[in-house]
Amino acid sequence: MGCKHCKKDLEHLPGKRKKEFCNDTCRSNFWQKERRKKNNAMKLAKGKKEPEPVVPPEKEEPKEQPKSVPDTNARPKTLDQLKALCPSELKGFDRSEWIGKKRQEYGI
Image 1 (tube, rainbow, N blue to C red):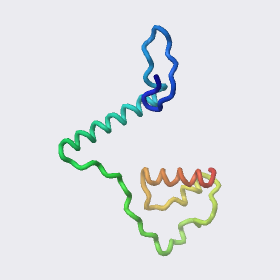
Image 2: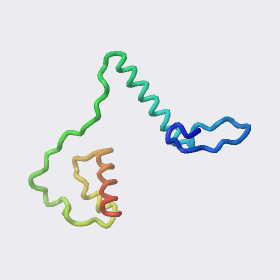
Image 3: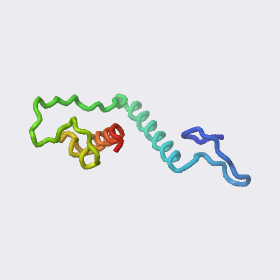
């Protein structure tokens, strides 16, 4: 029998209860997914539409950047330099996501 979440084979110890998950992360992810399925099914049963994926609105590109903004063509060497390049209109998770992608892109 494998992990309920990732389907990885599990080793069972004789005389012990059978394992259902390979680790805490798989256990947590499995039950979160089950809870989401249940909540969506309940919403559908009540006549509500299925939740649509959240798509951020398209943002207008600024025509001209102020001179105080660092040059975006310069390759940042540190995380602080990269953060300075982040567009000011990004906040919270969007900002973190942008920084994470750029860190991978620049190898910082």
